[in-house]
Structures are given as C-alpha cells and as structure tokens.
Length: 175
Image (cartoon, rainbow, N blue to C red; front, side, top):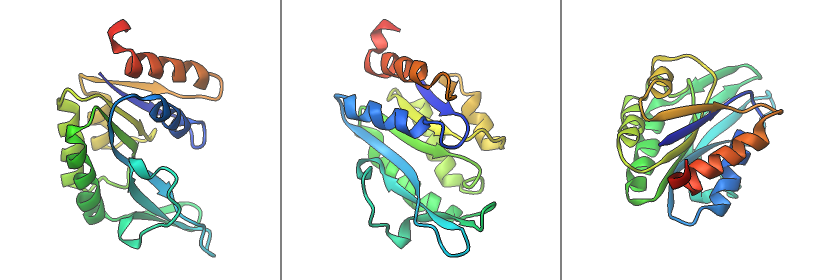
C-alpha cells in the first residue's frame, strides 16, 4: 500500500512525486523538505513545509529542521521535526494520500515525529514518500514495514518507476 522512493541525490525522486501530485484526483497532505538558499560557507538551511506549498520560496525560519554546515556536515533539530512534522502528519489524517518527502538521518532523535510516521504506515491511507539510502534504526523500520515497498530510482529507470508509481497510486485496483 505504501511506496517509498530511494536513490542518489538529484536522480528524480521528488520530481516523480511532484508529477504524481499534479495528476492525483483526491486530497493530499503531508510534508516535503527543501534546501534553502546557499550561505557564504556553502551550507544551507533545510526547511519542512506543507506539501501544498510546493512552489513556496518565502522560507519561514521557524520551519528549519536541519542545517547543512559547509558542504558535508549536517545538524538536525529534533524538536522542530517533532513540532512541525508531527503536526503536518496529524493534519494529513483526513486526506486521501500522504506525502513524506523526505525521510533520512537528520530526524533520528525526533521520536514524536518517528512515531507519527510509523502511525501513518498502520493506517489505510496510502503513503508516497522518499527515504534516503542511509541506514538508521528508524529508516530500517520503514524499509521492513509489512505494508511498505521501497523502489530504487536511477537515471536509467526513473521513467519506469514513474509509471509504476502511477499504477500503484492512481489505479491501485489494477495492481
């Protein structure tokens, strides 16, 4: 019932989700994470936003869930994941589809948020998300969840993955 996409950075995972959202006939809730403008040190803020704000460019400092420091280090803010992420997933309970773009290692200490994610996987509302190709206890719970399928996206298969996601989400009765 639930689909998560994984793969290298910039391979097209979020693009697949964006295309599907444009075609989806029902109501959608959930979140997306976006990288803010680059700072002089090469780092940037990572924001968590309502999935309905796909084209938003006015970033709210209260939505910073993590910070990339320089080019390789990250610092996560579990209390913000717990506050914003949990609220967005709670608000998505009445929707037809829940988007989680993306889950990774920065929320490894955001236990309320993790619980909200896992609670969504137990419900009968389909989830479409992105999960980083990393190994944490939380991400392993998603990978191994009995209702979850993880599809790897590569440059060579992203068109096929898009079609598979379309079939599974838009026409689940035929899968």
